Length: 504
Image (cartoon, rainbow, N blue to C red):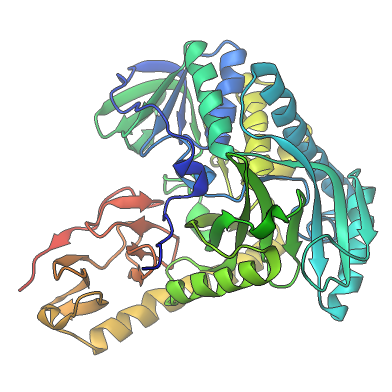
């Protein structure tokens, strides 16, 4: 019998955490931070060091969301970022971005050493390579732009990976680590300094009038400042839902044949396949990502996992997949994260989002910037990351992104209404969005024959959800909300569950 891979990420599987669901919720703090991932915990740690009382509120488990499902490269090499930044925003902006990301990398390096957090922090070289002749010139331009931005970048003609690389951009002095061990260690330091971390309580809203009040599922918390780092901003203000593009990247991991995979980190510029190594209890593992798709798109996710496993075996020596998981990412209109005031009129409400697959340095840089903004310190990257920036290019991207949303909103409704299917006809393992009477229902019959039926309209803005056949979830293609079979929220921006339905 074939061994099925663990559907938890390698990081969650190898880093158990204490249960903080019973921690009492304080009624008043200096700063309430919503979201217990890398941006939220970095912000919390820095603010505790600055003398602020801090609450971190996490709806699920700490470091078990997006930050626990990354490939965990701590790198300033973000694909082919710097040539594009220099062209669209200027060389000064590219240098500012590079400096902020490099500062984040070095802050992690220094803090892991200072606090003695054992998280497998390892220095490694990073490469973006191509196997296509037509991409070589782009890599040469990228190497020049990255070097001009102050980064340790050079163009090389090959990489130490089993691919037919024609050229690559090489960054030295980068790193990778175990993200959850890092964040759990940071959480312990926050609590040791007097901060409060609460799991299992969902923030449901923030009132900004007459002070700042966080409304949660168990009561209110008054805070002088509120920082929203919930991956997708959970408040429908600031129009973030119209300015973020949600995608999912698949990841497979397992022991590498002959322990041959090098320490370096590798990314294919054209296919976006990603490779890095991790030493797990003395065994060298490969962590391979790729096969991304828009959240909620009607795709066969199981087949994509199979394609990724085939690629990993052929190019990274990974012949036995022990873990597989999916990473949820958000990209901004101009591919620079939004970090700063939540909306132009906010004075005590802050946000960080849109790290575009580079959340280890991006989320850390966001936490360092947010701590400076909250405490009133100048930070040279503040204007670059300002969430309220807008230009003609952003306006065009907004129109394009929301045309995609409209396609899903209208087209999916038409398809479901046109093809009703009685729920009793669903076979084990089958899922469908269909009309039942006068409403649309998302239904799945599990292998044991039990029917799971919920309302098919996402509770965020009403788009129809689609079934993810690998993770057995209902995903919204418009803004990336995800729901379990019982309708409970797995990822926002939705904060309300899909209503349960009964078989008729």
